[in-house]
Image (cartoon, rainbow, N blue to C red; front, side, top):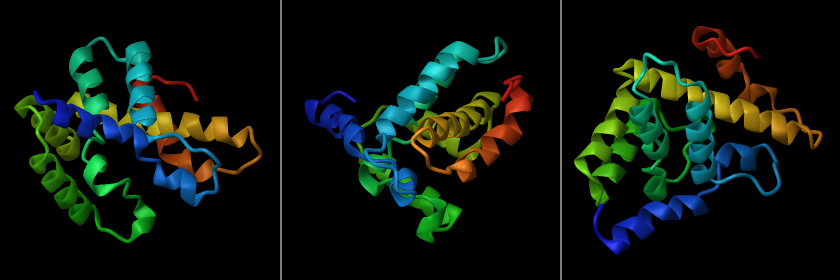
Length: 159
């Protein structure tokens, strides 16, 4: 990513609102970029020593970058996992990003490494913790916590 325009395009992820929170009636929901930051922060705190922490952090930052182009696609949108992957891959390919960014995105999508699997857990954990924050406003968002809770023990995270 070398041009000002490419950087501005990537930074527009700050303006993409998390669709699942909107669908659930959350007022003023977080952005996708806020979610990515949350994942990176959690990774900085709980990343297992045997994983490449820098790779994990970079993957947290870029794992949803394609949403700049395609938006935040949720399971409730009626789009298959395969179609979502194809749309997001096309989006990444159309963006001016480094080859490393493309590789990190693909690694996350294919879940081919221990780091990518940990980042998937972080994706769910950040969502579950954010659900707890929103639940303090009187909402029931337990549906957002199920996957994270089931994966937590695998990574030594006590729920």
